[in-house]
Image (tube, rainbow, N blue to C red; front, side, top):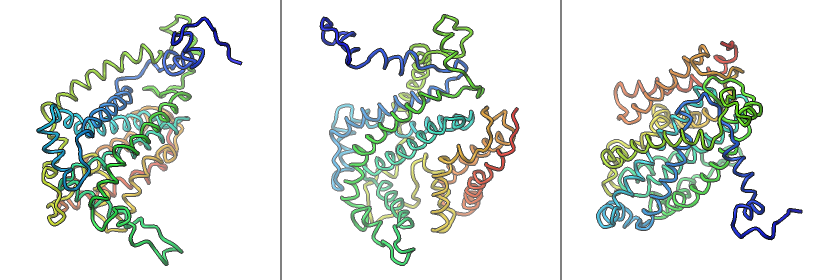
Length: 413
């Protein structure tokens, strides 16, 4: 039975510690959570993502106070009421819009850092899988939020994306019978309308944020046992290294405590990040707002060129060059490929890509190819752009098909 000191003052440290194990939680999550010494500023991206998500929640709450989820008033509530009538409404909208875009830049940096240093290997598979699940959830959150201003690109992007689900409609008895009304069921109507907007509003402000918070907790929990990777991919005996640190042999130890040592580095990197972030908020916010979306939604007037936000362009371009069925298969493959990375990489070597032979070539070709796909996704599908987009899509698929063969016979450096 737990022992309670009757003399302890309510809500004092001792009183709380007896009831909530404050000291134990502090050790597990903070002062005795050990981080390798030899890591660089790229390892701060996780904390930057958490801080940016916090900004999105805070700014979203302020916007929620004045946003009206109605097809008749949503556009005006965003572009007139919030921007002109609410004190500093423009600032909260700029913060929310810039954060929604920049968060994906940080996600991609975080993701590619993990691939470059092999942080998905050697017992860290759950870290990678939970991180990729967060990527999918953030994508869903971004898409649902893109619908809410109810501008031209919101409406037509919603139309195009929901049309994709026609290819994934549930089938019964091996395809003898199907569910032809699946897309209409998803929209709540034959075209995006009030039911569609209300559903995406609920997803954006309630359901998806709750799931994201839960998966963030899971993601941090998966880091606790295997610990984070390091720049050289070396195996570290964290128990032995931590023992040296606590004995005062800090130079001999290969680890540092998360708090306060590594956290101070995180805070410094976040300080630099937020200088750049608020520079964008005040001086270049327009990059995060599509000009087409400043026209009210009109179901009778199709934009000349429909495209998603920049962070979806690479996967959109993988879908676009093919016919409907092949496009859906390629699109589905692109969404699953990164989830399968820990199992496609057959090499036991945990090291930076520059020390892994052919994998180094694979990595940089993949980065360049995704940049090409992103650029092509913004351009109209005509002429030479169609050919380049098709080649880039085929290269992306080929890279992940070839990965097991490239890594299977990899030798240690």
